[in-house]
Amino acid sequence: MRTDTGTDPDEALHAAIAEASAASLRAAAPDPVTTDWAQSALRTHYGLSGTVAPAADRSGRCFELALPDGSLGELHVARPGADPEVIDFEVQALLHIARVDCGLPVQRPVPSQDGAPWLMLADDQGQPRAVRLLRRPQGQPMAHGRATSPDAVARILARLDGALARLWHVAGEKNLPGDIQRADRIRALLDLVPDATHRALAHQALDAFEQRAKPVLPALRRQPIHNDLGVHALLVDPAAAGEIVGILDFSSIVEAPLVCSLAGTAAWQIGIGQHDTGEDAIAVVAGFAAAYHAVTPLQEIEMRLLPDLTRARLAMDLAIGCWRLARDPMNSGELKTQNTIAAHRLRLMAACSPEKACEAVLQACRTADAG
Image (tube, rainbow, N blue to C red; front, side, top):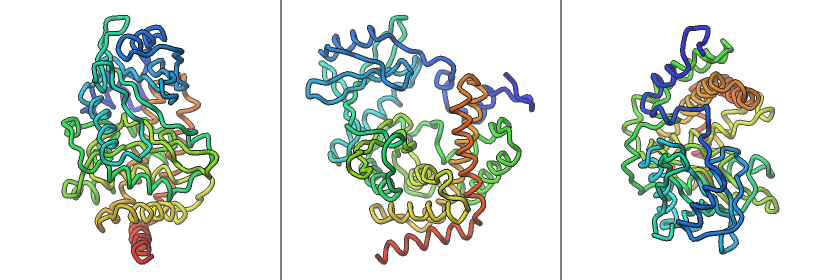
């Protein structure tokens, strides 16, 4: 499929995110495995039997089962060709968190009978597949549960970043997709954004990123970050006013400037219908920064860069969402909704001047210091 500009979505994504492998870019088939295969893998390598059921994500690569201690287990099967070092990065992050902050409610790797935290197994077609069994925290997905305050999300993000601060992994040096510090690499995909106004807003966000943020990012403190802590990755206790009781899905983990963690998650806090002006949106981002700052103090340069990095993340979400829509038009309903949300958030952020946005963040953090 080609767009009206003559751009092939595959070629555009390869050019925009050149560091991603061809295998990781295939958005067509989910490369499922059978339930029988999953059950055999659990029995042979983990000594587990019992009922195994496909998870609700419908990918055919995640299966649920009850573990001997009564907790919920999830068997995750990577696509063929997935980078083993990236899989190991995810698993080692979970193991590291368990060592340094065991109270953080993240998934816990369950070792195989040989003690391995993850395995490489051949599927029914003989293709090697990375497999890991994770113990899932109890809770209800935030997307379906009671509303949780942005402050609560900011605090648990700050704690999570603190736990990951001293982790090093060789895969952290890889250029991985979805990384805000390389936001300008997706500019070619903006040709796929159908609305001219939204396309212009995304270009302006990337312009601001290149002019003000990108030159100073190399000098900032950096570490592994979750990189995708949205409502799909958080579990809440429906009986405790939306208290966060679970953190899921470390598959997007990258090593990046710490402020990119804050920017990526702050972008999710701008709600549809709740914040109708640029001032409303930046107040949410500033409040989120202040709650984070109260746990993990931010440097002034990080505070100043936060609005531009949040806009850059939203431009990435819109560009990659439109690429996915071009690749998967049969899933247009959900993808169009996600793209509409990203465009709305981007419009709200753009309505506030950079100077006013920076001052709002600085003032909110100063107030947190004084309080």
